[in-house]
Image (tube, rainbow, N blue to C red; front, side, top):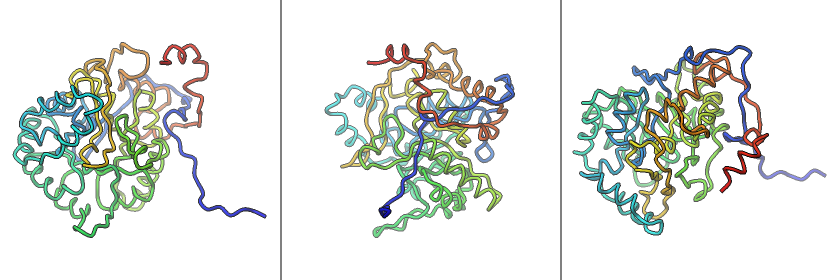
Length: 381
């Protein structure tokens, strides 16, 4: 007699469990095209700097933009709550492990000041950079018009988990279809990690979608509430939704893998899984220009009772330009990320990011340890 099954489970895969198969033809890295398009804006590198206070301030956004990427400023962060954010950042970086969580909860309990939104956006725009800003769904109806009037170019609506439908007894939730009509500029929404949720979000009229729940180095969502899907599987599923929506509507919605990317190898695997761009945090937190000064922390700390982020020490390793373009001073793949992407594309016969989507992947749980005995023991703590 067969036993009844209560719930079927699927096998899901993360970056360390898969590998890319080289192509039959190789290309020079300088012949690859890594452009990422968001609305009328084209970026020469398909990398977004995560909307986290330890990474993006106006100065970093300007620098990152000049290097060809897009940095997203968090409009519910320290830079819009405090006139002098440097003093607050110093408090966070100097706090002890025992006191830092309570400190962060207190710091993020201060209200967002509307006049600072205009100042921060204005600083980025005056420097000639594209300005992308992030806000959570509950505050979008209030903050988005202010940001638009201040000159933002791209709106990111982001939370730990974002869906097209939200049920609440206390308020009428954000209607993304209405937001798209009101804003008339590129809108990126996240985060999600399933085919059905991604497809529903795409049908609201958004331009790009963020994929990833809990994979970030400073995120503890998976530990606190047990939610998340490994990034390769999550990206594959959301890319399938993108392709289905393209057939359904004729509109191409970009997929942006957000979180869990630490090395150039992870970066290449994200694109092979179907990403059009990636959003990264901890590798950029290591830049000497990052405002976190060798620290990085999760933005869900603003929750008064259930923080789902932690402060980590990442150590400043190199200038931002070196992290993106090299030359690398380390052998672990954490520098020259763009060079790694171009080389990976060339090895895999991919001239463009969309051709990278067609690269064959294999399940390979031993890919990082096979033959690497001496590297493994040397890196062990």
